[in-house]
Length: 131
Image (cartoon, rainbow, N blue to C red; front, side, top):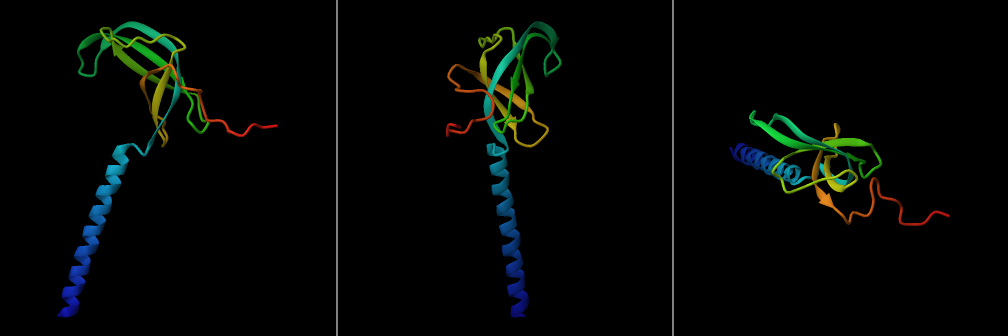
């Protein structure tokens, strides 16, 4: 009888530990461990374009096309962003932007915003100068 009770208690503890581990793993995934950020360059600004928004309503927007490389040297990849005509954020060709992308393939990039201080495009170089 004691063995059955202890066995059931151990099983309950094991199931509880698995549930807690799954909850923590899901929280880590949502926090963005599968994403990295890098610098990108605006290649093309197209607009105003008449089309449909996400809700299906007709709208006018500006389409921004960005080219970026991953931090590991893969690429070039392309990310696009549609901005409404009333948006205060204006992009021009050759602007520097931050792109957030999925580490896993297929690489899906999202244009996060424009910056002027990002030091370099593409993968990071070795800090030690090569002779």
